[in-house]
Length: 181
Ligand SMILES: CC(C)(COP(=O)(O)OP(=O)(O)OC[C@H]1O[C@@H](n2cnc3c(N)ncnc32)[C@H](O)[C@@H]1OP(=O)(O)O)[C@@H](O)C(=O)NCCC(=O)NCCS
Image (cartoon, rainbow, N blue to C red; front, side, top):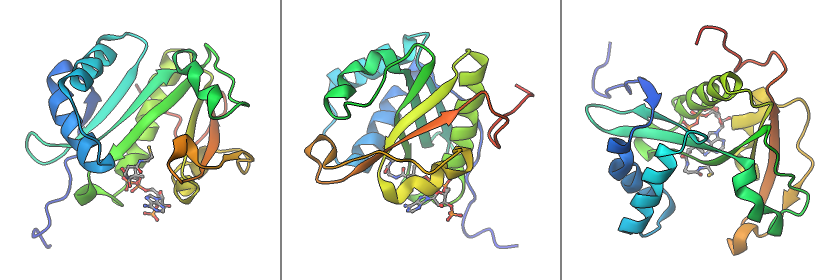
């Protein structure tokens, strides 16, 4: 066996406020944003909110390898300004962000986080999970989709990139469904 590359510790847990600073650092490196104290405070408020579901996957030691944040889509009503067909609903959880640190990518961690998000969303009675994703990342979501997504929004938030709308139906017995949580 080769131990040169330490495999990720795939412990996952719902986020706590103590994780906020490390998550902000990871977010900054992934998206090249500058993170202000106000952003960290906003993240902590997110974490305190009973309706937001954030799952993280731990890396080696104290590091965080990645996280996914699901928010009630009703709180994301401004998305209709970008995607006029978006329908916020109390039954829908919206993936606000999913991010895996570069050194842990392509090892199945985003898939693991998605599966956990699905389980937590089902436990809380959500019927669907939605997201806007760059088209090149659609394969990440394909195992959970019924049909090919049909809506792609050009120049998402003036980023120069298109984003495709996806929706996962939680009522169905999909691969992410888990009955042991
Ligand atoms: C997108 C991202 C979350 C994927 O995380 P990951 O842990 O590497 O994903 P997984 O290992 O679970 O990948 C599962 C499948 O998704 C697809 N996929 C994942 N990353 C991909 C990429 N960069 N390009 C194309 N397909 C990709 C592949 O089909 C992959 O299966 P394979 O490795 O057997 O080919 C990660 O690359 C990331 O954080 N990127 C930076 C932030 C970002 O773009 N977030 C998404 C938009 S908010």
